[in-house]
Length: 506
Image (cartoon, rainbow, N blue to C red; front, side):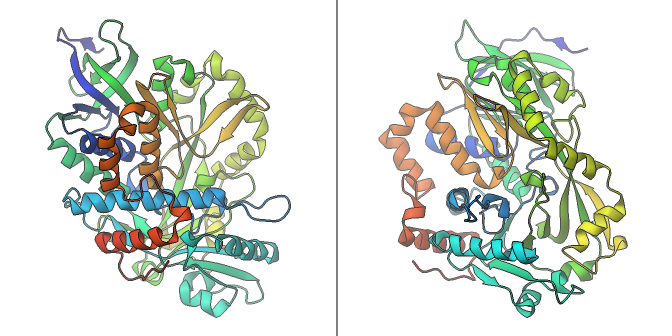
């Protein structure tokens, strides 16, 4: 049993809970905006980015809506909705600008090649799906953010782009594909760890690994917040105080948000979805595939389970993954506890969770089917994308755990959300990030939204505005409405980040 030490309460300006890409992004931004700010970071595991930000635990696509079909749903009238895709594409451009700034400042010198160019493709088969992809392509061409996208129904061209997908396929089957050469692969684990290594070198920043945050409450005497932390190595427990707390603990954020007892947390619940990959072990096959190929999700599948045949660069080595296959576990973290889900249920979120469950019976059925899949079932799913796949060329890899947001809804009672959401107190003294995809790829825009909510006066100051324009040159402007600025900044970030084989025009 852990015992509290008779030690004075530690204090800092900011506490960041969780050492993932979100906390890293916020920590770096705050130090850029205010070099004198003091920050303490607490991570329950023994290294940064070991949960959702780890390369094996996320899609790593550099989600830019180029290939992810779930961001462009088909409306009832048959037209294709592109609003979310445009927003995500714009957000990823902001992320690239911020990363380019950090590279130019020498901040990411120990994370070479954390981002690499790789074509993003969408691939479908069947008449209805081909029609959908054609309409999607035409709709996206209305935005310059998708300039350079190619569309084809030519089987020979698709085989040229991605031979594994076409080898052995029925020649009579209607197929279609799009391709964006501007796509990227991002190792968010390497990026996150590099950001924290540099943060640790800065005055006023302290990292605490193997430290588990148990409790959080408002401090009546000091103002701000106190957290109770356990050093899991020594079993000592102590309190830490800060003016501002960010809960960026992935699936663990919900329970800590609930413990804060802020009114804004009421009605939020979480639905955990686990995942698995098939990882290719045949180097010859790996070398033949050079793209991220996304398809359409099965009926009832969560967005994080959109199937893709995915070239990755992890720890300097080229990899090929297929999946993810969805599953269900009551854990909120890959390294969590099976009691996470039961402990998250409270009177304030019980009704929304029950109603969301009733409205998503198809999802429940889908997850049960996924859990029951045999290796042969998994191979059958892979063969829809790689017809000549053999089971002995692949091994199972456990992916990360995601907790989808459930929130109260006046009409439905409770709804299941598949994006990310920042929940903050009215006074801006605490904020938590809930949800999953597209997550890491849009971390920069998410943290800008958080700072607007929690530091509104500073965000309006001339000092912070100017510093943001240095970090993110498009800050305060709409890339979606400015083709010339988009072309200019894409060319710059591509040169800085080593993505220089493409040319851009307004």
